[in-house]
Amino acid sequence: MLIRIPKPSELKENQVTDQNVYQNRRNILKGLGYLGAGALLSSHKANAFNLFNNDDETSFKTRALSFAQTTSENDKHILTPEQKIITHNNFYEFGTSKADPVETSQNFKVDPWTLKIEGLVEEPITLGYEDLYKAFDLEERIYRLRCVEAWSMVVPWIGFSLQKLLQKAKPLSSAKYVAFETLYDPKQMPGQKSRFSGGGIDYPYVEGLRLDEAAHPLTLMSVGLYGKTLPPQNGAPIRLVVPWKYGFKSIKSVVSIRLTDKIPPTTWNKLAPSEYGFYANVNPNVDHPRWSQASERLITTGSLFNRNRVATQIFNGYEEVAPLYKSIDLARYI
Image 1 (cartoon, one colour):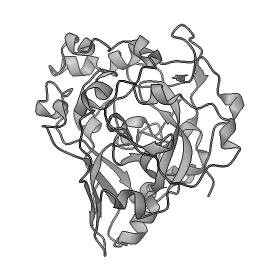
Image 2 (cartoon, rainbow, N blue to C red; image 1 turned 180 degrees about the vertical axis):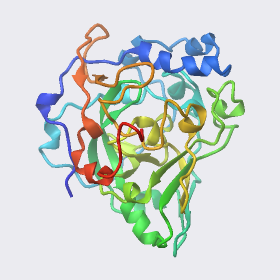
Image 3 (cartoon, helix red, strand yellow; image 1 turned 45 degrees about the vertical axis):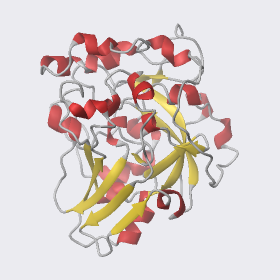
């Protein structure tokens, strides 16, 4: 299996995210009346400097995982530092500011956990918390994560191919799509208590893929990063990772995977259909209505004042998925 990793020459150090872009994205929420300007600064730590704070203030306990190591070639690539990955997050269930999830999720309970795979399958599956780590052999995959807000990271995920899970469930011939759903638990996820505090989203968060996208070898169910189980702000205990799509497709804290014969609803498409499509493939040739997608800010090492950018690649550089869309107008079906 080929896992496309950007070449070292394509990645430069000293590149960080631009807070203006993600704030611009939230303008639509303000326009809908779901997000006040004050919510953008709801946390005393909700600012760009938090990216470079190396203090460990988290209380959620992760644990080391046993997994197949990557090849030595992958070690040459510049990874986003772990501290930045776990403190710079979009997870509206825990708040709409980048700094909110790490602050408000540390008492999140992941054990017990139930993940159900059902719908148009021969063999419905229910996985408990420990099953997430034992049902399939775990491997590390270094993927580039491209947010629709025009920033990106390089993340060493740990997990297993969704293809393996689907094969075990045995999809029926009538199954065409895969629907995903995040845990709904307003007691643990403060953003779910109200559409006003949760960015206007009608919870639970839902996502979807075509069956052939879900079954592609690159599509990953991640249970960890940087050698350990996932922290809650990054989607513990299990999340989807689809590296050639914008980050909002990679749904977090998944409790349901359902195979269906109809296109499933997806959260951001429901909220703003003119801005967020079902496919959401990374495409530098199709701009967001309010900003360019031609380039991105790569979060690696460096200070706040380094503003170098990298060119965005079609499918985020994972060109092996192109045959999935050979009959689709990528400019029309966003």
